[in-house]
Amino acid sequence: MILEHLRSLLRATGMAGRLSPLMTRLENFVLARHGKIVQRSMSPETSEIVSASGTVIRAGPPRHYADMMLSRHELPTLVACVNVFAPVLKNGVAWDVGGNAGFYSTLLSQLVGHEGSVYAFEPVPATFHGMCANLSAAGACNVTALNLALSDHEGMVPISFDPASDTTSSIENTTGMSCMEVRAATGDGLVASGECLPPTMLKIDIEGHELKALKGLEKQLARAECRAVLCEIHYAILAANGEHQAGAKVRKALTNAGFDRIYFISRSHLIATKNLF
Image (cartoon, rainbow, N blue to C red; front, side, top):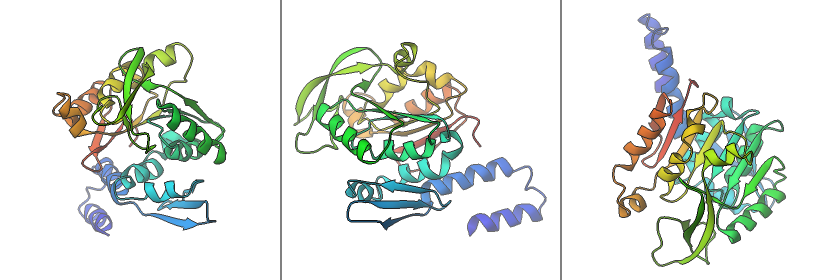
């Protein structure tokens, strides 16, 4: 309603044309932050998530992942994927960095379509196997799952995890959890070796390791074809490891890579786009 009033005012004052790009940015910001997402049940095991634009995403099995993603914390990420990134995702290549249970990989699989590809990165073996099972159950045949972490170097790195939970693991935070070594690689290295196709969109949620992953993706981020990034910033973990002003550092890395629209849709969720709006 507010946006409609603003558009009417701009038309009345003859400024609608001049401020059209700004209005587009504002509308996408509002969609990303407040876009309507509803869930409807299909069976005891599955449900559908429907966006304001009418996009339908099958969620499940297991169905409880849809409930989790519709929570207050995850909703901005979900809405941004469905409502903002559609032009980039269709027939594109999406990287789900921090695949976890595979919910976003399943969502991205549907948004890129049969001609597109998704790479899901999950370093913890137990979580990785669970993710693969969920992807198989969802019929996400255009998703390639990789049991590794994205970082700023190649090699083995220690990662902490909670054996009782498949939603908690971190390379940066090792307090009070079990620890193991996992393979790490750079995004640039994976593309150079032919293991992955270059991304057109990345979703990054890796519990405080996001700055290092971005460092290892510098060449990919700078490509004109890489047009969208959705990144969750874990301030507390980063600060505990001496990385202060994390939001500004992530913004700088993306600005240096040519992203011309960068804004926060929540305190910890950042969207960056390049030649999109």
